[in-house]
Length: 280
Image 1: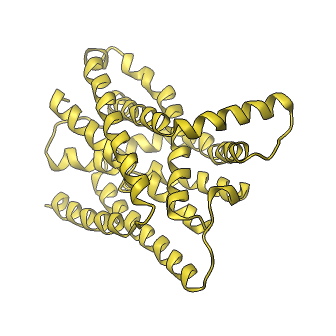
Image 2: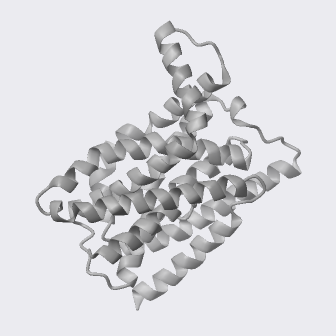
């Protein structure tokens, strides 16, 4: 992987990880379309992708620092006291814990299968189409709820059961082409959250998950085959982080009034185009 290719993939990751269009799917498909001779089965490539995710997680933590500071403080206080006070920050913190819990064992179980899918751009293209259709279904559900005059809610009213379901939905994002943010936002819409609340919970939930994945995979960057490229990989992580910060700043404003439909249509169109090009 050349310096230019690494930076392109880093920029791509930083933007598409938070936009609900599957960064992993794009990372699998575009090198094949560009005829880049990158061995995506190499363990150091997966570690490089995870390092880009760490840059993204760092950007998320910085952007949502005003949310994380009271959340962390409230959860620590409840652990020390051995009881919960019911404050909004504490409730949100423990719902994030509940949402994170299901994905940890699934990550260990599915890691090898994920490696195998890195070499399957056609599968990624097909799953991008599925990802787009899933978001269209989520928006259709929201519109039906509005027509039935069912009120959407904020994070303060999110139940523990709904938080666990949203967290478990992240398992679908192990498949390249299925967006983690898209899946969790749709799951949030199913839980009757407003768009902005669903996006906020999705991005908060992403931070510990992505950081945890980095702790598991980044050590592979120090293997003999990857060590000569470590500086390039680290620069890629910085580029991904900057792009992610700008992306989340845009998306949090967008979801105050915007919907998932444009991203869904893009995924379907790009998935179909990629399928045609890869077949040729």
